[in-house]
Length: 338
Ligand SMILES: *Cc1c(COP(=O)(O)O)cnc(C)c1O
Image (cartoon, rainbow, N blue to C red; front, side):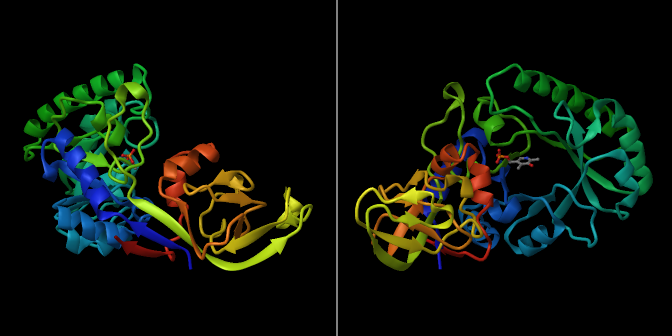
């Protein structure tokens, strides 16, 4: 079966770069949602622990529970708690959900500073504090998310200004409500890497840790290395004559006689089908014909081929982002740390 390898040295290299920006290892909150961006949740949690990362961010409670033993702190971005834990924090994404959180839950309040996806409005801070207190929740942090940190525009700046205002008001409210000191965080990978004066309590870093950032030149940071490589294995080979057509829809016609081999990685496993008949591997093996569910054909004979070792390259062919290439990889593909 197709196989994913995870390069530990590259991962640690990326975390070293990230730690330069956060100025401390324990300000790195590694984003492990979506099976750790397709890398494998438990594999990456284990490596992160080995490196000394103490914080993680996931989408769901069930993911947090699977990795509880690896971290001191786990933030669940979008789920109402069903269990209690001293390590897991839950994001509040709007006012109406507050009444559903069980008493004494550790919560972090998401504030909408301009993305308009999740979070309370900036004008709702006071009422949110009141409702959180009334519900008996433990408010530990406020956070926000940038909608355009990876784009060179004014957006990053005014969202930062908005969050600055939020922080100021929240500090005043926390005194008034007698809360402990609040923590603040707003940076994803791009926001962290374009900030030379990071001074928040943590950064929520995903794609940079996996080594697949695609930032504009002016905010590009050198040195990141992709962690994940994908290998496929030969199922069968055949000699085809000139004029023979390969696969569904007869999309590729042989220009000469040649050997075509069929490999065990298809769109059902996460190979974006739009790459059909239009992709060449890092070792110059040409993909021909349509990608099918569990198969793809290449003009080569090797038993094992490297499909990609940099998701950004496939993303370019597929007109998408490395995030989609990576999170498309199915969890059942074998993962091996190298
Ligand atoms: C996914 C996510 C991140 C991580 O973003 P990257 O661009 O991968 O660093 C950070 N914060 C939130 C709220 C997210 O949903």
